[in-house]
Image 1 (cartoon, rainbow, N blue to C red):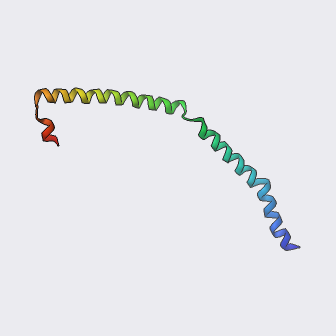
Image 2: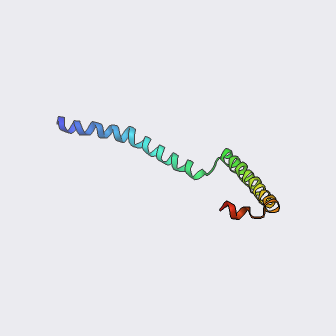
Image 3: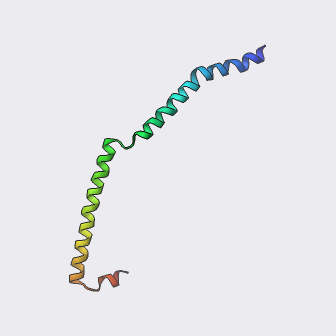
Length: 78
């Protein structure tokens, strides 16, 4: 009989405490994952996008200036 209790008690503890908590946390993380990006994340992405556009324009302008001042700079930089 003591062998049966040795298996029965941990099984009941697992089914009553661990399993429901495990399921709740699992599905909570799945729902959170499906929500997508937070508002703060979207703001950061927008800010990075604007910065990238500005930097891209600056690169184009700098290349145009270098083309005017030093026409062979592309050959020397490679």
